[in-house]
Amino acid sequence: MDRLKTRGFRITATVLIILLIAGAVGGLFYWVHKNNLKKLVSTYFLIKSQYLNEVSTATLVNGAVKGMVEALDDPYSVYLDEEAFKELNLQIEGTFGGIGVEIDMDQDKQLVVVSPLPETPAARAGIKSGDVIAKINDQETTNMTTIEAAGVLRGKPGTTVSLEIMRKEEKRSFTVQLTREQIAVPSVSGEMLEDYPGIGYLRVLHFNRASTNAQLFEELKKLQDAQYRGLVLDLRGNPGGDLQAAVEVAGYFLKEGPVVRIVHREGAEDVLYPTRIGSVVKVPLVVLIDEGSASASEIVAGAIKDSESGVLVGTRTFGKGLVQTVFNMGGKEGVKLTTNKYLTPDRHDIHKKGIKPDVVVKQPEDMEKDLQLDKAVEVLEKQLQEDKKAA
Image 1 (cartoon, rainbow, N blue to C red):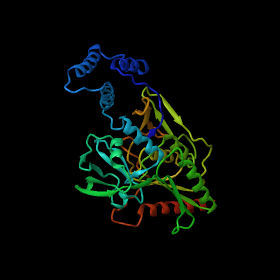
Image 2: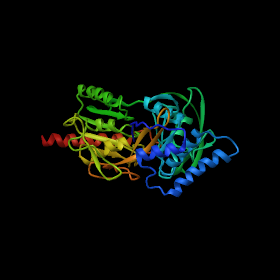
Image 3: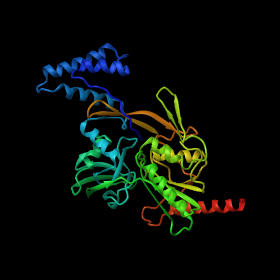
Image 4: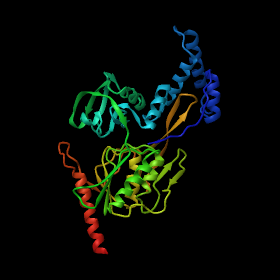
């Protein structure tokens, strides 16, 4: 989950000034042993004076910054050069030429598919959550960041890209060639379920600060006008998105309590509450989750579970409990760093663990019938009957 925030830093033309600025704003070198500082400066001057080819100071500075971030050994923290920074902005805008797949790094630092977007080249090719992308156009992804990989996957609509997929549970690898299309990342869709009278259905595919809240409001209003009796909130395959959008969405469903606890590096907590008092949804609620539900969607699911505002049905979620912040390094470059972790309202740390549903239902890959949705409706109908008896 990204917290998109910028802070300006100016990069100077020399390593010495860079070190002074870094020390001034962050105390980065305050406790560094003088020999380590000497090593860095000596290496700079050795390259400038002895290396066979001439190298610009900007190249060396960017390399030093990238090396420092890579030394964190955190797949979610990356240096964003001009191209990567541009790619991140494309992600935020929500429309691009690509294959329609959300990617991330797993705990083994492998490039993994969080979820394919519906009705996109990736989905039509059968790519699914948990698939490891081993190669893109015969290029190993081992040392790629997620943003670098996204930059390679995206391109002009009509062009092709080849992926080597490793599917761990089937112990096999295969190659697919996909044709890029114009991808508009959807946010929220809703409908009354035709086969289940009175049951409303909402699917949130991504958390976007610009559109998710407004779209959710409109779709809920349609369901309310249709006099829905129960609601299924589908977060399956939702890879996350903006933190504030997740807090806003959770506010529609929570009976009480906070949405999430943001834990800072020194241990202090920010407890985030919904902006509204009292949930908008007053009918029984079931939330669908699976291994493709990650980050911001886990925040919403965790808050609903802890507050007992609804029942979770499906399979265990992805398990990403970290928050990234994007820092603008001045001009066209930046750094994305893991700056916080989050806990559910009841202080559950879900990182690398995920959230276990209240009702576990696996969906067979070769079955068209949606067993998880059927179970969600079954749970809703039971709740509606119990509420009717109680009344």
